[in-house]
Length: 320
Image (cartoon, rainbow, N blue to C red; front, side):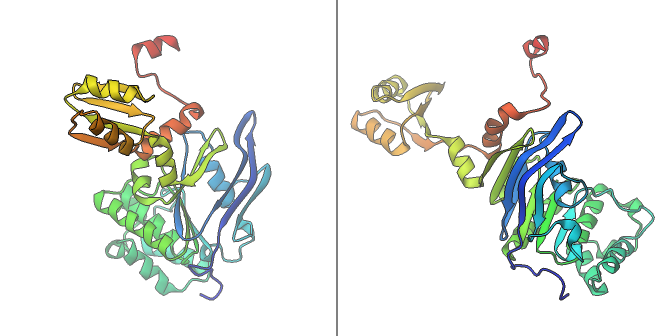
């Protein structure tokens, strides 16, 4: 496949100053970022943040009102054999229900001059070889998702874009997609995935793009975002709670009671807490630096960017 962009050739997604307006609603507002090859980049944000609109613009399905979205330095619509450069799954249901899985892929392959043997390869890769002759209309959501992923990989693309890739997959399928995403990035491809499940991104993504109300809120590694959210909080477990609180607050730390034998300390690293307690004869059974989950970090970052929120208490409902 000489016209394709082979894995590892440094193809990026570059978005610069992207803008999209739907009547009075600004869906994308001066958005800029780069999706680098060799890593899995998570694309996250609250409902209505502009993720789907941005991906549709990148793939030439919507036109931007301003700015650019380029794949390997070119707009998607100018790629001569687009499936050989970028593979995407936005909607697993966008398949003719009367076609077999194999014929669906053969049709796509023919449109981009992809050899027939590649169809068999991706059917096997997606675990669909045994159902290749079945019509898609009889597929479960998980099977359609696998077919969409197979179609995205048909051209052996250097760039992969998935919207909610684990949607409909069972546990085995989720484990499979995790390994697949990592292997695609390890091959040097640029991998962009949109997901609402922070737990999945924490285990899979290397980098995060967080948007809210169409604007970029964060462009950072997963590790750095979690570290920032974790702050300098330390949990101390001790039967000498009052003494520990006195010792630590005397040096300027903020100390709060968590439960009967646990306090949370803010303002001191764990090593300093251990030093102070030991020096003052305060016994303890555990000292641990707090590590926020990716979900905690995400919720904190997007707290003011939620477009649609639900009241969770009676007071919240009454205040609306």
